[in-house]
Length: 138
Image 1 (cartoon, rainbow, N blue to C red):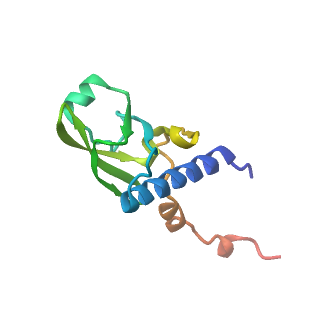
Image 2: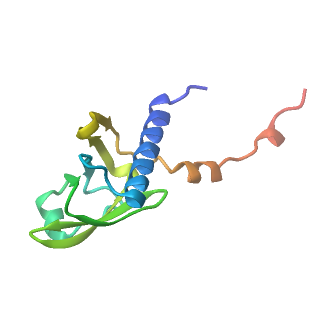
């Protein structure tokens, strides 16, 4: 059986991003910290205002630094209110839609591969089937 190590790494990277965003939602950002996040706008589950979808039909980058509110993080996605032209809009982004995540203040970055077939770790463990009953007995 061949292992898909790239998928394992990508899922691990998404978990890292999730944990970083959870920490930011609970504790805020440190003095110089800011996040550059790039994602596929046409990915299933991505919710952005229509004017942004028209302007960025396939890919968009956002910065979480000063003008954001209500950062909430679940197992599979995050949502945040961002200011565009002084008006706040809610964006909801599944972790599987991410392309890049970086915090330049600490020279940290991850490249991610969007993947509609990758589930969250919780979802993957729920799909485990015990095949021992189907094995031939020796």
